[in-house]
Each structure stands twice: as structure tokens, then as C-alpha cells.
Length: 270
Ligand code: SF4
Image (cartoon, rainbow, N blue to C red; front, top):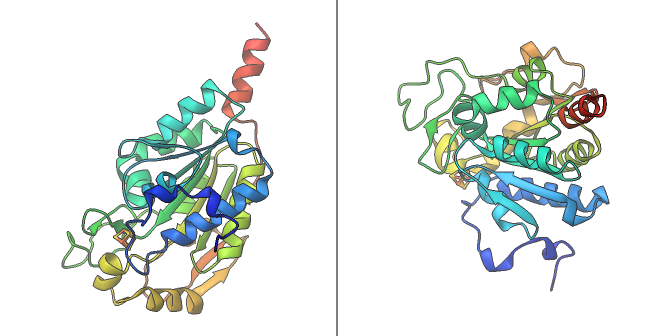
């Protein structure tokens, strides 16, 4: 029996590569849901990714997608939007891709207010390559390359992206499916650099090393510790997994003229 959204999947690419308990299937499901509800014809949607487990999502979608090089999803997406501003361009990538290898691209895409919808799946490590620490691994947490605990201060993603001027900034976990779909739908309505952090379990790597041996234990942690606060002071929403509350919500929703519109009006004046 077919599911109503099955037509959105490239069935010839299945089965997928994701581990049992990985949150990426939920993220893909929420993206498909928002895309269908957007009412925007599929021909106008494009989905771009870099490299890693998260970046496999566009490869499973039956639409125009680009699986680019590590950290470079944003420059590809930027070029696409500048070349054809009729496109609704989404980027789906992981924390290592967007905040380590592609960190420089991220700050400039946000600074320019490029009209892109960026979904960052944060599982606090490089999952595909064996669980090395990333720029979002909380201090003290164990990964394949921080066996005695990470000594670096991680990025507080919503704070970083909001300080770069993003039009929309949101954070949810994979436990919050309805909120995730709605946030992605809102990004598809809004012009500008729209950013969603999705906190997701990676059971065989970050989870196993940090007392979350299976996906259920991490989802249970989310259920007990997440607090919705749209008005939170974003300087204080970092995540440490040390028993503090995880603040989720739609923190910023403030449309500003995006890069391609400012460019058009500049050339119209000449
Ligand atoms: S390694 Fe982690 S992120 Fe990658 S598929 Fe497995 S659970 Fe998901």
C-alpha cells in the first residue's frame, strides 16, 4: 500500500543508509510535509546538501536536488538563487558541514541575507565518518576524537545565526514533528536567510559515548528537558547535556529585503 507522500521519494535509491534510531528520517518527512503544504509547484523547489549522513536527504527526494562537496552547499545554493530568483532554495546539512567546514560560507550567506532556507541537523558530531567531535559538541562530551572529553566551547547555533542577521531563527528537536513542519513551512513563506536547527540523535556515535545508548533514551531526555520559549535570550540557549533545559522555539521572525531584491533595485536605478 502506498503512502500519500511516496511519490516524493526516489524509490530506486532505497533502502536508505541511516542507522536504526537516527533522526534524519523524521527531518526528511517534515521537509516533505512542508513542501507539499507550501503550495509552491515542485518545479520551483530545489534542495541542496553537502556531505554526510544529513546530506543524504536530498538524494532520496524525487525533485531537483544537488549533493555537493563538503561544506559547500551554501555557495552552490547562493549561485542558484542569484541565477534564478524564482527558485525556492533549501539547504539541508549537518553541524559539521555548516559550522566547521562550511562555517565561512555560513557567515557570509547570513550576512548577505541570501534568500535561502537552511535546515541544520545538529547531532553534535560527524556521524558518517565515525563520530569525531564538531563545532557543536558540548564541552566535556566524549566523541571518537575527544576520548577524555571535549575541551572546546561549542557554538550556540541560534545565537550565532541571529547575530549574523538571519530573518528567521528556530530550534526544535526531532521529537517536535508538528513544530518542525510548521517552522519549515514558515521558512518557505518568508524571504531572506531563514535558519532552523534540528537537534537529532546519533545513537551509535554521540549517543553511545554520552549515556544515550539508543534513540529512545535521547528522545526521553528531549521530552523531559525541552522548554519552548520564543522570546528566549539567545545568548543563553547553548546546549551542554548537563541537566540544563534545552530551549526550543521560533526565536526570530523578521523579514528583511533579501540580497537578490536589493541587487535588482540597484540595477533598476542605473
Ligand atoms: S551515524 Fe548517526 S547521523 Fe549517521 S545515520 Fe547513523 S545515527 Fe544517523
